[in-house]
Length: 271
Image (cartoon, rainbow, N blue to C red; front, side, top):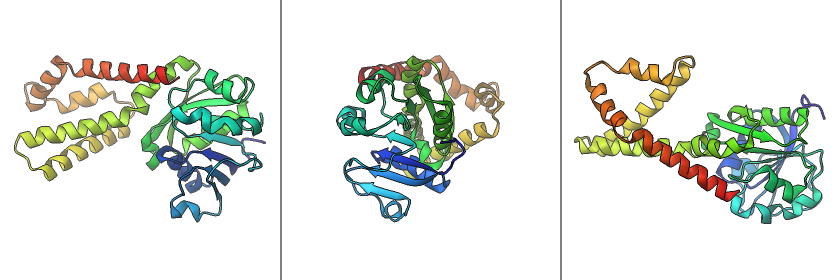
């Protein structure tokens, strides 16, 4: 098919938080006319009532051959979930895996050495169209299949391609797991506010909106570096400078380095 032949037919294996977020972005943008969803858990009513969505509790041979098949299952159960699918899938379908740490080589062992495969790492802000995903393709993915994947992934936010698969573990550590770090920072900022005497509700409101507003300001100024945005808030000898002296002279950067290295190592272990 041509990449312009929208909407597409897709099959989604696993419909947890990330899988359902991706599917909703396709449906909301009218990018799919037919979605097969294979998941043991029933779908939410607003999805099950959509005539484009066809639900199966388990995989069945004969399901409509999709343009793209998305593996959105936990890496620990990937092989088990994929055994029967591997017997049916053809080279006309591009397989896109969002299972953390699962290399192209591992996926080729399951689905065949000549199967078109894309390995992708999204993140949870995809649920509101604010995600970022990074992909790497094996040598059997056609230009048309890459465009189809690009269109579907871009519905959830920004999408980037890389050529070096070894970088995917670092991508996983930074952006795949990154939202959890930001949420933990909000927690920590709110707790610090409480220690200064603020009540819990006010402190968490201040922490959340400070992070939300700062991120929006960075988005609104794409050509301005984070360092410059920081400097714009910081008056020499002022309150912000006093706080930054603690963060920048302490172990803040070291802790982030250690945290991302730990996540990268775990991603490598999963592969």
